[in-house]
Length: 84
Image (cartoon, rainbow, N blue to C red; front, top):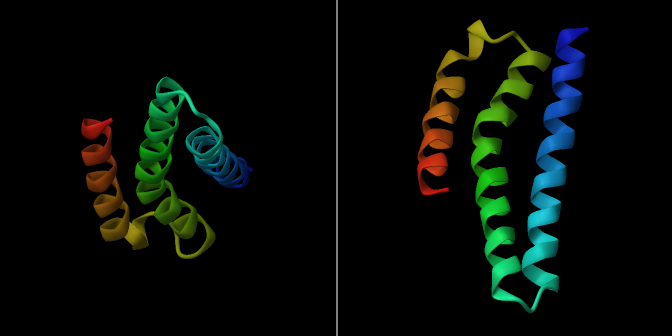
């Protein structure tokens, strides 16, 4: 049950953050709102490097079998969090 809820949350979170970021960048004429849109995109794309491998691992062989991709995803996510 935990794996299903985590999958649903991860998919909902990533799609929501990236969609809101794109809308804020494209539809806004105010630089302030465009900046928040860019930050939302950086956050969503950075988190996707961590969450997509996690979703894949939960759907296939488990977290232990996908340690390399999970570690690489955490590395990339930490770099984007530093930029954010």
